[in-house]
Length: 600
Image (cartoon, rainbow, N blue to C red; front, side, top):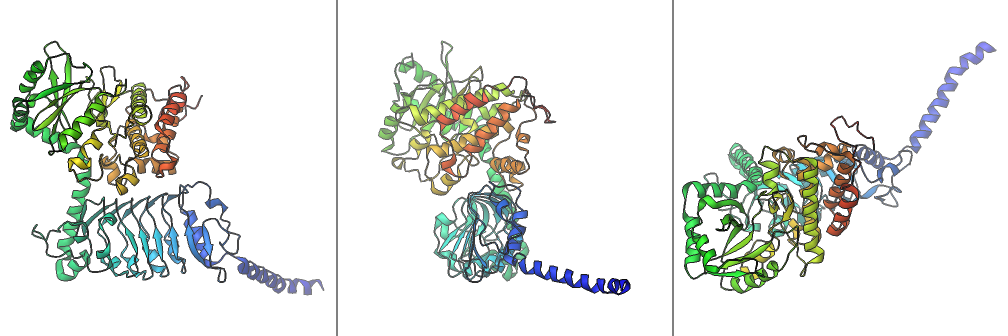
Protein backbone atom coordinates (compact mmCIF):
# COMPACT_ATOMS: atom_id res chain seq x y z
CA UNK A 1 0.00 0.00 0.00
CA UNK A 2 2.80 2.41 0.85
CA UNK A 3 4.43 1.67 -2.47
CA UNK A 4 1.12 2.38 -4.27
CA UNK A 5 0.70 5.77 -2.54
CA UNK A 6 4.20 6.83 -3.43
CA UNK A 7 3.50 5.93 -7.05
CA UNK A 8 0.31 8.04 -7.06
CA UNK A 9 1.94 11.01 -5.31
CA UNK A 10 3.73 12.22 -8.43
CA UNK A 11 0.72 12.77 -10.75
CA UNK A 12 -1.43 13.99 -7.82
CA UNK A 13 1.00 16.74 -6.94
CA UNK A 14 1.37 17.60 -10.61
CA UNK A 15 -2.40 18.16 -10.97
CA UNK A 16 -2.49 20.32 -7.83
CA UNK A 17 0.43 22.42 -9.08
CA UNK A 18 -1.17 22.79 -12.52
CA UNK A 19 -4.46 23.89 -10.94
CA UNK A 20 -2.62 26.47 -8.80
CA UNK A 21 -0.81 27.91 -11.82
CA UNK A 22 -4.02 28.18 -13.84
CA UNK A 23 -5.83 29.81 -10.93
CA UNK A 24 -3.14 32.44 -10.46
CA UNK A 25 -2.88 33.02 -14.18
CA UNK A 26 -6.59 33.78 -14.31
CA UNK A 27 -6.08 36.34 -11.54
CA UNK A 28 -2.91 37.93 -13.03
CA UNK A 29 -2.99 41.56 -14.17
CA UNK A 30 -4.12 42.15 -17.74
CA UNK A 31 -1.72 43.21 -20.56
CA UNK A 32 -2.46 46.94 -20.13
CA UNK A 33 -1.61 46.69 -16.44
CA UNK A 34 1.61 44.87 -17.26
CA UNK A 35 2.58 47.62 -19.70
CA UNK A 36 1.87 50.28 -17.07
CA UNK A 37 3.94 48.41 -14.49
CA UNK A 38 6.87 48.44 -16.93
CA UNK A 39 6.21 52.17 -17.42
CA UNK A 40 6.30 52.61 -13.63
CA UNK A 41 9.53 50.64 -13.28
CA UNK A 42 11.29 53.08 -15.62
CA UNK A 43 10.36 56.03 -13.34
CA UNK A 44 13.12 56.93 -10.89
CA UNK A 45 11.20 59.42 -8.72
CA UNK A 46 7.72 60.88 -8.25
CA UNK A 47 5.51 62.53 -5.66
CA UNK A 48 4.30 59.14 -4.42
CA UNK A 49 1.51 58.34 -6.86
CA UNK A 50 3.05 55.32 -8.63
CA UNK A 51 3.76 53.06 -5.60
CA UNK A 52 -0.03 52.85 -5.25
CA UNK A 53 -0.13 50.83 -8.48
CA UNK A 54 -0.32 47.23 -7.23
CA UNK A 55 0.81 44.36 -9.47
CA UNK A 56 -1.54 41.92 -7.67
CA UNK A 57 -4.60 43.74 -9.03
CA UNK A 58 -6.42 41.98 -11.89
CA UNK A 59 -6.50 45.22 -13.88
CA UNK A 60 -5.22 48.82 -13.46
CA UNK A 61 -8.67 50.41 -13.63
CA UNK A 62 -8.61 51.64 -10.02
CA UNK A 63 -5.09 53.01 -10.17
CA UNK A 64 -4.73 56.76 -9.77
CA UNK A 65 -4.27 58.50 -13.10
CA UNK A 66 -5.67 55.55 -15.06
CA UNK A 67 -9.13 55.31 -16.64
CA UNK A 68 -10.54 52.18 -18.29
CA UNK A 69 -13.45 51.38 -20.55
CA UNK A 70 -16.09 50.03 -18.15
CA UNK A 71 -17.05 47.10 -20.36
CA UNK A 72 -13.71 45.88 -21.67
CA UNK A 73 -11.50 46.93 -18.72
CA UNK A 74 -8.93 48.17 -21.25
CA UNK A 75 -7.02 51.37 -20.46
CA UNK A 76 -8.16 54.42 -22.45
CA UNK A 77 -6.73 57.36 -20.45
CA UNK A 78 -3.38 57.79 -18.67
CA UNK A 79 -3.27 61.20 -16.97
CA UNK A 80 -0.24 61.82 -14.73
CA UNK A 81 0.33 65.56 -15.05
CA UNK A 82 2.16 67.58 -12.38
CA UNK A 83 3.36 64.59 -10.37
CA UNK A 84 7.12 65.28 -10.43
CA UNK A 85 7.69 62.10 -12.42
CA UNK A 86 11.30 61.74 -13.48
CA UNK A 87 12.86 59.19 -15.79
CA UNK A 88 12.44 57.97 -19.37
CA UNK A 89 9.06 57.16 -20.91
CA UNK A 90 9.03 53.39 -21.29
CA UNK A 91 8.39 52.12 -24.85
CA UNK A 92 5.93 49.65 -23.26
CA UNK A 93 3.45 52.50 -23.24
CA UNK A 94 2.99 51.62 -26.90
CA UNK A 95 1.48 48.25 -25.89
CA UNK A 96 -1.68 49.87 -24.53
CA UNK A 97 -3.63 49.22 -27.71
CA UNK A 98 -6.81 51.15 -26.89
CA UNK A 99 -5.18 54.22 -25.32
CA UNK A 100 -6.97 57.42 -26.32
CA UNK A 101 -5.35 60.11 -24.12
CA UNK A 102 -1.76 60.26 -22.81
CA UNK A 103 -1.19 63.26 -20.53
CA UNK A 104 2.27 63.37 -18.92
CA UNK A 105 2.86 67.12 -19.03
CA UNK A 106 4.66 69.30 -16.46
CA UNK A 107 6.87 66.54 -15.10
CA UNK A 108 10.61 65.83 -15.36
CA UNK A 109 10.65 63.12 -18.03
CA UNK A 110 13.87 62.91 -20.01
CA UNK A 111 15.13 60.77 -22.89
CA UNK A 112 13.28 60.38 -26.18
CA UNK A 113 9.63 60.18 -27.16
CA UNK A 114 9.05 56.44 -27.72
CA UNK A 115 8.43 55.65 -31.38
CA UNK A 116 6.23 52.79 -30.10
CA UNK A 117 3.50 55.36 -29.45
CA UNK A 118 2.80 54.98 -33.15
CA UNK A 119 1.28 51.57 -32.33
CA UNK A 120 -1.50 53.16 -30.25
CA UNK A 121 -3.65 53.86 -33.27
CA UNK A 122 -6.67 54.97 -31.22
CA UNK A 123 -4.78 57.87 -29.63
CA UNK A 124 -6.65 61.16 -29.80
CA UNK A 125 -4.48 63.31 -27.54
CA UNK A 126 -0.77 63.37 -26.60
CA UNK A 127 0.29 65.94 -24.00
CA UNK A 128 4.00 65.83 -23.17
CA UNK A 129 4.75 69.55 -22.77
CA UNK A 130 6.87 70.93 -19.94
CA UNK A 131 9.37 68.07 -19.62
CA UNK A 132 13.01 67.54 -20.61
CA UNK A 133 12.50 65.20 -23.54
CA UNK A 134 15.23 65.25 -26.19
CA UNK A 135 16.05 63.63 -29.50
CA UNK A 136 13.89 63.56 -32.62
CA UNK A 137 10.12 63.71 -33.02
CA UNK A 138 9.24 60.13 -34.04
CA UNK A 139 7.92 59.89 -37.57
CA UNK A 140 5.74 57.01 -36.34
CA UNK A 141 3.39 59.56 -34.78
CA UNK A 142 2.14 60.04 -38.31
CA UNK A 143 0.44 56.62 -37.98
CA UNK A 144 -2.02 58.03 -35.43
CA UNK A 145 -4.85 58.84 -37.82
CA UNK A 146 -7.27 59.62 -34.95
CA UNK A 147 -4.93 62.13 -33.27
CA UNK A 148 -6.55 65.51 -32.60
CA UNK A 149 -4.26 67.05 -29.99
CA UNK A 150 -0.45 66.97 -29.99
CA UNK A 151 1.46 69.18 -27.55
CA UNK A 152 5.19 68.48 -27.10
CA UNK A 153 6.21 72.08 -26.43
CA UNK A 154 8.78 73.27 -23.85
CA UNK A 155 11.11 70.29 -24.12
CA UNK A 156 14.58 69.89 -25.65
CA UNK A 157 13.59 68.17 -28.89
CA UNK A 158 15.90 68.54 -31.87
CA UNK A 159 15.97 67.71 -35.57
CA UNK A 160 13.16 68.42 -38.00
CA UNK A 161 9.38 68.09 -37.93
CA UNK A 162 8.53 64.83 -39.72
CA UNK A 163 6.42 65.25 -42.84
CA UNK A 164 4.27 62.35 -41.64
CA UNK A 165 2.75 64.68 -39.01
CA UNK A 166 1.21 66.65 -41.85
CA UNK A 167 -0.93 63.63 -42.76
CA UNK A 168 -2.86 63.77 -39.46
CA UNK A 169 -6.01 65.25 -40.96
CA UNK A 170 -7.94 65.31 -37.67
CA UNK A 171 -5.31 67.40 -35.88
CA UNK A 172 -6.95 70.35 -34.09
CA UNK A 173 -4.14 71.43 -31.75
CA UNK A 174 -0.43 71.24 -32.58
CA UNK A 175 2.34 72.79 -30.47
CA UNK A 176 6.09 72.20 -30.77
CA UNK A 177 7.15 75.62 -29.46
CA UNK A 178 10.24 76.17 -27.29
CA UNK A 179 12.41 73.30 -28.46
CA UNK A 180 15.56 73.10 -30.62
CA UNK A 181 13.87 72.11 -33.88
CA UNK A 182 15.43 73.04 -37.22
CA UNK A 183 14.68 72.87 -40.94
CA UNK A 184 11.58 73.52 -43.05
CA UNK A 185 8.13 73.17 -41.52
CA UNK A 186 6.18 70.76 -43.76
CA UNK A 187 3.63 72.66 -45.81
CA UNK A 188 2.13 69.77 -47.77
CA UNK A 189 -0.45 68.77 -45.19
CA UNK A 190 -2.45 69.83 -42.15
CA UNK A 191 0.50 71.72 -40.57
CA UNK A 192 -0.03 74.57 -43.02
CA UNK A 193 -3.15 75.46 -40.98
CA UNK A 194 -1.26 76.23 -37.75
CA UNK A 195 -0.01 79.70 -36.83
CA UNK A 196 3.34 81.00 -35.68
CA UNK A 197 2.56 80.35 -32.00
CA UNK A 198 2.69 76.59 -32.65
CA UNK A 199 6.36 76.87 -33.67
CA UNK A 200 7.70 79.81 -31.61
CA UNK A 201 10.99 79.43 -29.75
CA UNK A 202 12.66 77.15 -32.34
CA UNK A 203 15.36 79.34 -33.83
CA UNK A 204 16.25 76.90 -36.59
CA UNK A 205 12.82 76.47 -38.17
CA UNK A 206 11.69 78.11 -41.39
CA UNK A 207 8.56 78.02 -43.51
CA UNK A 208 5.39 79.82 -44.49
CA UNK A 209 3.78 79.31 -41.08
CA UNK A 210 6.36 81.56 -39.38
CA UNK A 211 7.01 83.90 -42.33
CA UNK A 212 10.60 82.70 -42.55
CA UNK A 213 11.98 81.81 -45.97
CA UNK A 214 13.93 78.58 -46.19
CA UNK A 215 17.21 78.47 -48.07
CA UNK A 216 18.03 75.99 -50.78
CA UNK A 217 21.27 74.03 -51.01
CA UNK A 218 23.14 76.97 -52.56
CA UNK A 219 22.16 79.29 -49.72
CA UNK A 220 19.52 81.18 -51.67
CA UNK A 221 15.81 81.43 -50.79
CA UNK A 222 13.86 78.30 -51.59
CA UNK A 223 10.72 78.50 -53.67
CA UNK A 224 8.91 76.05 -51.41
CA UNK A 225 9.26 74.76 -47.88
CA UNK A 226 9.35 71.06 -48.47
CA UNK A 227 9.95 68.62 -45.68
CA UNK A 228 13.23 66.77 -45.15
CA UNK A 229 11.62 63.57 -46.34
CA UNK A 230 10.60 65.22 -49.63
CA UNK A 231 14.13 66.44 -50.12
CA UNK A 232 15.43 62.96 -49.53
CA UNK A 233 13.00 61.49 -52.05
CA UNK A 234 14.43 63.82 -54.67
CA UNK A 235 17.89 62.40 -54.23
CA UNK A 236 19.23 64.98 -51.80
CA UNK A 237 19.34 62.81 -48.70
CA UNK A 238 23.03 63.17 -47.94
CA UNK A 239 23.08 66.85 -48.73
CA UNK A 240 20.05 67.59 -46.61
CA UNK A 241 21.30 65.54 -43.69
CA UNK A 242 24.54 67.45 -43.80
CA UNK A 243 22.69 70.73 -43.90
CA UNK A 244 20.42 69.59 -41.05
CA UNK A 245 23.45 68.69 -38.94
CA UNK A 246 25.02 72.06 -39.66
CA UNK A 247 21.75 73.83 -38.88
CA UNK A 248 21.35 71.99 -35.59
CA UNK A 249 24.94 72.73 -34.65
CA UNK A 250 24.44 76.37 -35.56
CA UNK A 251 21.30 76.56 -33.44
CA UNK A 252 23.01 75.11 -30.38
CA UNK A 253 26.03 77.27 -30.98
CA UNK A 254 23.84 80.33 -31.23
CA UNK A 255 22.34 79.59 -27.84
CA UNK A 256 25.77 79.27 -26.32
CA UNK A 257 27.09 82.42 -27.94
CA UNK A 258 24.19 84.80 -27.30
CA UNK A 259 25.84 86.14 -24.17
CA UNK A 260 29.15 86.62 -25.99
CA UNK A 261 27.95 88.32 -29.16
CA UNK A 262 27.67 91.76 -27.68
CA UNK A 263 31.06 91.39 -26.04
CA UNK A 264 32.55 90.56 -29.44
CA UNK A 265 30.85 93.61 -30.91
CA UNK A 266 32.38 95.76 -28.21
CA UNK A 267 35.77 94.24 -28.96
CA UNK A 268 35.47 95.08 -32.64
CA UNK A 269 34.49 98.63 -31.82
CA UNK A 270 37.44 99.00 -29.53
CA UNK A 271 39.93 97.54 -31.95
CA UNK A 272 38.78 98.71 -35.37
CA UNK A 273 36.28 101.52 -35.25
CA UNK A 274 35.51 104.98 -33.98
CA UNK A 275 31.90 105.15 -35.09
CA UNK A 276 30.41 104.56 -31.64
CA UNK A 277 32.55 107.16 -29.92
CA UNK A 278 31.98 109.54 -32.79
CA UNK A 279 28.26 108.87 -32.32
CA UNK A 280 28.37 110.00 -28.69
CA UNK A 281 30.25 113.13 -29.66
CA UNK A 282 27.59 113.83 -32.28
CA UNK A 283 24.86 113.14 -29.71
CA UNK A 284 26.01 115.80 -27.29
CA UNK A 285 27.20 118.35 -29.80
CA UNK A 286 23.78 118.97 -31.32
CA UNK A 287 22.09 120.76 -28.47
CA UNK A 288 21.94 118.05 -25.79
CA UNK A 289 20.55 118.74 -22.33
CA UNK A 290 21.16 117.09 -18.96
CA UNK A 291 18.30 115.97 -16.72
CA UNK A 292 19.26 115.37 -13.06
CA UNK A 293 17.12 113.50 -10.52
CA UNK A 294 16.86 114.99 -7.03
CA UNK A 295 20.23 116.72 -7.19
CA UNK A 296 22.00 113.37 -7.70
CA UNK A 297 24.48 114.93 -10.14
CA UNK A 298 26.36 117.80 -8.44
CA UNK A 299 27.76 119.14 -11.70
CA UNK A 300 26.74 121.68 -14.28
CA UNK A 301 25.31 120.46 -17.57
CA UNK A 302 28.29 122.07 -19.31
CA UNK A 303 30.78 120.02 -17.27
CA UNK A 304 28.97 116.77 -17.93
CA UNK A 305 28.60 117.40 -21.67
CA UNK A 306 32.29 118.27 -21.91
CA UNK A 307 33.17 114.90 -20.37
CA UNK A 308 30.77 113.10 -22.67
CA UNK A 309 32.38 114.67 -25.73
CA UNK A 310 35.70 113.12 -24.75
CA UNK A 311 34.42 109.55 -24.41
CA UNK A 312 35.89 107.05 -26.86
CA UNK A 313 36.11 103.29 -27.39
CA UNK A 314 38.71 102.94 -24.62
CA UNK A 315 36.04 103.87 -22.09
CA UNK A 316 33.73 100.94 -22.93
CA UNK A 317 33.31 98.77 -19.84
CA UNK A 318 30.40 96.58 -20.87
CA UNK A 319 27.76 95.74 -23.39
CA UNK A 320 24.20 94.57 -22.80
CA UNK A 321 20.92 94.11 -24.56
CA UNK A 322 20.09 97.80 -24.27
CA UNK A 323 23.37 99.33 -25.41
CA UNK A 324 27.04 99.83 -24.67
CA UNK A 325 28.19 101.04 -21.27
CA UNK A 326 31.00 103.57 -20.75
CA UNK A 327 32.99 104.65 -17.74
CA UNK A 328 32.45 108.37 -17.11
CA UNK A 329 35.06 109.89 -14.78
CA UNK A 330 34.59 113.43 -13.50
CA UNK A 331 37.39 115.83 -12.49
CA UNK A 332 36.66 115.45 -8.75
CA UNK A 333 37.33 111.69 -8.92
CA UNK A 334 33.70 110.54 -8.93
CA UNK A 335 32.98 107.83 -11.49
CA UNK A 336 29.68 106.95 -13.18
CA UNK A 337 28.45 104.41 -15.71
CA UNK A 338 26.92 105.71 -18.93
CA UNK A 339 24.48 103.59 -20.95
CA UNK A 340 23.73 104.74 -24.51
CA UNK A 341 20.25 103.97 -25.91
CA UNK A 342 19.38 105.06 -29.42
CA UNK A 343 16.27 107.16 -29.99
CA UNK A 344 13.50 104.99 -31.42
CA UNK A 345 10.85 107.24 -32.98
CA UNK A 346 8.94 110.48 -32.63
CA UNK A 347 6.75 109.25 -29.77
CA UNK A 348 9.69 107.71 -27.99
CA UNK A 349 10.86 110.86 -26.20
CA UNK A 350 7.74 111.65 -24.19
CA UNK A 351 7.17 108.06 -23.10
CA UNK A 352 10.84 107.46 -22.31
CA UNK A 353 11.22 110.62 -20.26
CA UNK A 354 8.08 109.89 -18.26
CA UNK A 355 9.31 106.39 -17.42
CA UNK A 356 12.82 107.60 -16.59
CA UNK A 357 11.38 110.04 -14.08
CA UNK A 358 9.79 107.07 -12.32
CA UNK A 359 12.95 104.96 -12.44
CA UNK A 360 15.04 107.86 -11.20
CA UNK A 361 12.82 108.19 -8.13
CA UNK A 362 13.40 104.58 -7.05
CA UNK A 363 16.16 104.37 -4.45
CA UNK A 364 17.16 101.24 -2.58
CA UNK A 365 20.33 99.79 -1.12
CA UNK A 366 20.23 96.80 -3.46
CA UNK A 367 19.33 98.64 -6.68
CA UNK A 368 21.71 100.49 -9.00
CA UNK A 369 20.94 104.19 -8.74
CA UNK A 370 19.87 106.08 -11.89
CA UNK A 371 21.14 109.63 -11.32
CA UNK A 372 20.04 111.32 -14.51
CA UNK A 373 20.37 111.27 -18.28
CA UNK A 374 21.56 113.25 -21.25
CA UNK A 375 18.78 114.07 -23.69
CA UNK A 376 19.83 114.43 -27.33
CA UNK A 377 18.13 114.29 -30.71
CA UNK A 378 19.60 110.87 -31.51
CA UNK A 379 19.90 108.99 -28.21
CA UNK A 380 19.46 108.88 -24.46
CA UNK A 381 22.60 108.60 -22.33
CA UNK A 382 21.60 107.18 -18.94
CA UNK A 383 23.91 108.01 -16.04
CA UNK A 384 24.14 105.37 -13.29
CA UNK A 385 26.33 104.81 -10.26
CA UNK A 386 29.55 103.06 -11.18
CA UNK A 387 30.17 99.82 -9.26
CA UNK A 388 33.81 98.86 -9.00
CA UNK A 389 33.16 95.13 -8.62
CA UNK A 390 31.77 94.77 -12.13
CA UNK A 391 29.04 92.27 -12.91
CA UNK A 392 28.29 88.96 -11.25
CA UNK A 393 28.73 87.33 -14.67
CA UNK A 394 32.32 88.53 -14.78
CA UNK A 395 32.98 87.49 -11.19
CA UNK A 396 31.67 83.97 -11.78
CA UNK A 397 32.94 83.23 -15.27
CA UNK A 398 35.78 85.52 -16.28
CA UNK A 399 38.02 85.99 -13.24
CA UNK A 400 40.63 83.62 -11.89
CA UNK A 401 39.86 84.54 -8.29
CA UNK A 402 36.87 82.46 -7.19
CA UNK A 403 34.02 83.67 -4.97
CA UNK A 404 33.86 81.81 -1.67
CA UNK A 405 30.68 80.51 -0.09
CA UNK A 406 29.95 83.52 2.10
CA UNK A 407 30.43 85.92 -0.82
CA UNK A 408 28.02 83.91 -2.96
CA UNK A 409 25.39 83.83 -0.23
CA UNK A 410 25.65 87.60 0.29
CA UNK A 411 25.29 88.22 -3.43
CA UNK A 412 22.20 86.00 -3.64
CA UNK A 413 20.73 87.73 -0.60
CA UNK A 414 21.32 91.21 -2.03
CA UNK A 415 19.84 90.30 -5.41
CA UNK A 416 16.78 88.78 -3.69
CA UNK A 417 16.20 91.90 -1.59
CA UNK A 418 16.55 94.19 -4.59
CA UNK A 419 14.08 92.16 -6.64
CA UNK A 420 11.68 91.85 -3.70
CA UNK A 421 11.67 95.64 -3.37
CA UNK A 422 10.78 96.03 -7.05
CA UNK A 423 7.95 93.50 -6.77
CA UNK A 424 6.39 94.48 -3.47
CA UNK A 425 7.53 97.80 -2.05
CA UNK A 426 8.32 100.38 -4.69
CA UNK A 427 5.63 102.46 -6.37
CA UNK A 428 4.82 101.60 -9.06
CA UNK A 429 5.76 97.94 -8.69
CA UNK A 430 8.17 96.74 -11.36
CA UNK A 431 8.64 93.40 -13.09
CA UNK A 432 12.28 93.25 -14.13
CA UNK A 433 11.93 90.80 -17.09
CA UNK A 434 15.67 90.26 -17.52
CA UNK A 435 17.16 88.94 -14.29
CA UNK A 436 20.56 87.42 -15.11
CA UNK A 437 24.11 87.49 -13.78
CA UNK A 438 25.21 90.34 -16.05
CA UNK A 439 22.42 92.50 -14.59
CA UNK A 440 23.61 91.95 -11.01
CA UNK A 441 26.42 94.42 -10.33
CA UNK A 442 28.86 94.30 -7.43
CA UNK A 443 30.46 97.09 -5.44
CA UNK A 444 34.02 96.99 -4.11
CA UNK A 445 32.83 94.91 -1.12
CA UNK A 446 30.97 92.43 -3.37
CA UNK A 447 27.58 93.74 -2.29
CA UNK A 448 25.00 93.06 -5.00
CA UNK A 449 22.86 95.62 -6.82
CA UNK A 450 20.12 94.85 -9.34
CA UNK A 451 20.55 96.88 -12.54
CA UNK A 452 18.55 97.59 -15.69
CA UNK A 453 15.22 97.31 -13.87
CA UNK A 454 12.40 98.87 -15.85
CA UNK A 455 14.33 99.03 -19.11
CA UNK A 456 12.88 95.86 -20.64
CA UNK A 457 9.31 97.16 -20.43
CA UNK A 458 10.39 100.66 -21.32
CA UNK A 459 12.08 99.59 -24.55
CA UNK A 460 9.40 97.10 -25.56
CA UNK A 461 6.35 99.25 -25.03
CA UNK A 462 4.05 99.65 -28.03
CA UNK A 463 5.09 103.27 -28.40
CA UNK A 464 8.66 102.22 -29.09
CA UNK A 465 7.64 100.14 -32.13
CA UNK A 466 9.80 97.24 -30.96
CA UNK A 467 8.14 94.02 -32.16
CA UNK A 468 10.01 91.51 -30.00
CA UNK A 469 7.48 89.67 -27.86
CA UNK A 470 9.76 88.25 -25.18
CA UNK A 471 12.36 90.32 -23.40
CA UNK A 472 15.07 88.61 -21.42
CA UNK A 473 17.89 86.17 -22.02
CA UNK A 474 17.68 82.56 -23.12
CA UNK A 475 18.35 80.14 -20.28
CA UNK A 476 16.80 82.40 -17.63
CA UNK A 477 13.27 82.56 -19.08
CA UNK A 478 10.33 80.81 -17.46
CA UNK A 479 8.59 78.28 -19.75
CA UNK A 480 5.25 80.10 -19.70
CA UNK A 481 6.94 83.41 -20.51
CA UNK A 482 8.65 81.95 -23.57
CA UNK A 483 5.32 80.59 -24.74
CA UNK A 484 3.00 83.51 -24.03
CA UNK A 485 5.32 86.53 -23.84
CA UNK A 486 3.45 87.66 -20.71
CA UNK A 487 5.76 88.74 -17.88
CA UNK A 488 4.68 88.41 -14.24
CA UNK A 489 6.36 88.49 -10.86
CA UNK A 490 6.54 84.70 -11.06
CA UNK A 491 8.54 84.81 -14.31
CA UNK A 492 11.06 86.99 -12.47
CA UNK A 493 11.10 84.44 -9.61
CA UNK A 494 11.95 81.69 -12.11
CA UNK A 495 14.84 83.77 -13.48
CA UNK A 496 16.05 84.39 -9.93
CA UNK A 497 16.01 80.63 -9.30
CA UNK A 498 18.17 80.09 -12.38
CA UNK A 499 20.50 82.81 -11.10
CA UNK A 500 20.86 80.98 -7.77
CA UNK A 501 21.77 77.77 -9.60
CA UNK A 502 24.32 79.70 -11.66
CA UNK A 503 25.91 81.12 -8.49
CA UNK A 504 25.96 77.69 -6.85
CA UNK A 505 27.42 75.84 -9.84
CA UNK A 506 29.65 78.48 -11.38
CA UNK A 507 28.16 77.48 -14.75
CA UNK A 508 26.09 79.59 -17.11
CA UNK A 509 22.49 78.41 -17.63
CA UNK A 510 23.33 77.33 -21.19
CA UNK A 511 26.70 75.78 -20.45
CA UNK A 512 27.97 73.53 -23.26
CA UNK A 513 27.81 70.46 -21.01
CA UNK A 514 24.04 70.99 -20.61
CA UNK A 515 23.30 71.70 -24.27
CA UNK A 516 25.11 68.54 -25.36
CA UNK A 517 22.66 66.53 -23.25
CA UNK A 518 19.64 68.52 -24.43
CA UNK A 519 19.32 70.21 -21.03
CA UNK A 520 19.75 73.57 -19.36
CA UNK A 521 20.82 74.21 -15.77
CA UNK A 522 17.30 73.51 -14.46
CA UNK A 523 17.22 70.21 -16.31
CA UNK A 524 20.60 69.34 -14.85
CA UNK A 525 19.34 70.02 -11.31
CA UNK A 526 16.31 67.81 -11.93
CA UNK A 527 18.52 65.06 -13.31
CA UNK A 528 20.78 65.20 -10.26
CA UNK A 529 17.66 65.07 -8.10
CA UNK A 530 16.60 61.78 -9.67
CA UNK A 531 19.83 60.27 -8.40
CA UNK A 532 19.71 62.09 -5.05
CA UNK A 533 22.88 63.99 -5.99
CA UNK A 534 21.64 67.58 -5.83
CA UNK A 535 24.74 68.62 -3.88
CA UNK A 536 26.88 67.74 -6.89
CA UNK A 537 25.71 70.98 -8.49
CA UNK A 538 28.01 73.00 -6.22
CA UNK A 539 31.07 74.58 -7.81
CA UNK A 540 34.10 72.46 -6.80
CA UNK A 541 36.18 75.66 -6.71
CA UNK A 542 33.96 77.24 -4.06
CA UNK A 543 35.53 77.19 -0.62
CA UNK A 544 33.73 76.99 2.71
CA UNK A 545 30.45 75.49 1.51
CA UNK A 546 28.16 74.55 4.40
CA UNK A 547 25.80 71.63 3.92
CA UNK A 548 22.83 72.96 5.87
CA UNK A 549 22.76 76.27 4.03
CA UNK A 550 23.48 74.51 0.71
CA UNK A 551 20.52 72.15 1.13
CA UNK A 552 18.24 75.01 2.14
CA UNK A 553 19.37 77.08 -0.83
CA UNK A 554 18.81 74.17 -3.21
CA UNK A 555 15.31 73.78 -1.82
CA UNK A 556 14.55 77.47 -2.41
CA UNK A 557 15.99 77.37 -5.94
CA UNK A 558 13.96 74.25 -6.75
CA UNK A 559 10.78 76.02 -5.67
CA UNK A 560 11.67 79.08 -7.75
CA UNK A 561 12.22 77.10 -10.96
CA UNK A 562 9.06 75.02 -10.64
CA UNK A 563 7.38 74.53 -14.01
CA UNK A 564 4.14 75.68 -12.41
CA UNK A 565 4.07 79.45 -11.64
CA UNK A 566 1.59 78.85 -8.81
CA UNK A 567 4.14 76.71 -6.98
CA UNK A 568 6.83 79.39 -7.00
CA UNK A 569 7.18 81.57 -3.89
CA UNK A 570 6.97 85.34 -3.97
CA UNK A 571 10.22 87.27 -3.64
CA UNK A 572 9.17 88.41 -0.18
CA UNK A 573 8.88 84.75 0.80
CA UNK A 574 12.24 84.00 -0.83
CA UNK A 575 13.90 86.68 1.29
CA UNK A 576 12.27 85.27 4.42
CA UNK A 577 13.51 81.76 3.62
CA UNK A 578 17.01 83.00 2.84
CA UNK A 579 17.21 84.89 6.12
CA UNK A 580 15.78 82.10 8.30
CA UNK A 581 17.17 78.96 6.67
CA UNK A 582 20.24 79.88 4.61
CA UNK A 583 22.03 82.75 6.32
CA UNK A 584 22.15 81.04 9.76
CA UNK A 585 23.62 77.56 9.11
CA UNK A 586 25.33 75.34 11.66
CA UNK A 587 28.90 76.74 11.80
CA UNK A 588 30.51 73.32 12.14
CA UNK A 589 28.72 71.79 9.18
CA UNK A 590 31.18 72.27 6.34
CA UNK A 591 30.82 70.51 3.04
CA UNK A 592 33.32 68.22 1.43
CA UNK A 593 33.05 65.96 -1.58
CA UNK A 594 32.78 62.80 0.52
CA UNK A 595 29.41 63.89 1.87
CA UNK A 596 30.31 62.63 5.35
CA UNK A 597 29.96 65.96 7.16
CA UNK A 598 26.47 65.65 8.57
CA UNK A 599 27.34 66.68 12.10
CA UNK A 600 24.67 69.30 12.66
